[in-house]
Length: 250
Ligand code: NAI
Image (cartoon, rainbow, N blue to C red; front, side):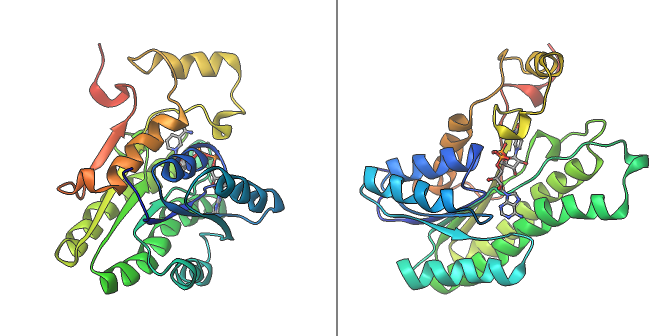
């Protein structure tokens, strides 16, 4: 098992890509700290997962827009499990609008969750991982971190920021035994896309050379690879998980 006895935090771990990653980490022998906005159901989900696998899963209510809660998540993990071996910085929100119609408030809200939220959790994690001398952080970016798309000014600015934040953190952390990478999913069939009508869905499918949307489990596989020692010589990399979306036009 690739994550045997490792303690892994997954933010936004209660839904979609995050939940699939929580489950795959459990399958790979990890203890998992599922962090997400508070909800009674999430406590039950974590308890159900613990009963199905050898590792332990707990839910820690965490809003990534709060530095205090980010710090508390790391402190709670260390208090309970002793170390933070891996973090999947996945919590995020969508949002579409023409750039000229964005209010400051709406634009900054998306940046606050999708970019500063990643920074808050990474900062708290790095402090702990530097003390340990080891760790692996995986940030969730997007194809919209490496290319633009109309109607996504705030989201693509945030995800572009995540890609370059990843590179800089990787450089700072390299000499301290800590790796930092990103995944860049194409369009993945999760609750984030549930508002799409059939035409829009088909439009998005057609943009992927592999001819379909991705599955959460396919992103989770890439994340577990980057969290595990299998990727021990990889750091600062944005890994495309996009069905060929960013490869070019055929
Ligand atoms: P989702 O909506 O299914 O899950 C997102 C999770 O983040 C939810 O559980 C939500 O409660 C949590 N969350 C939202 N705000 C939070 C906050 N302030 N603090 C803590 N948790 C918070 O979405 P999905 O699709 O699984 O997305 C996960 C990540 O993947 C996001 O960062 C998203 O931008 C990224 N992504 C998704 C793509 C897609 O097509 N679904 C494509 C590329 C990237």
